[in-house]
Image (cartoon, rainbow, N blue to C red; front, side, top):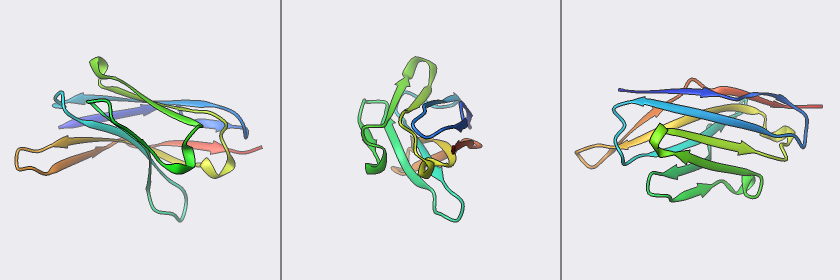
Length: 120
């Protein structure tokens, strides 16, 4: 089992910054992908950014140049630095850890979510 604990959400004005953290514990292994997703009210959950243990990073187009994902592999922790926040970034942000399975598939683990609200 894998447990994910998120922190760092909150209320911020447009143009402000927040840093999210997600610490993973349990049977993780050295090969994994950790990332951030978000879900706004009435919308589907969407990818924000993800990073593999091998260093590959993907960003959603709507956050390129504003958000930065980083990892501390020794601590099994992933961070999301969010700058120049906009009201449309308001959502619950979820951390996900994806692990390869011996059968060739993957198993996903999710955090409980942290609220980010961007408003004047």
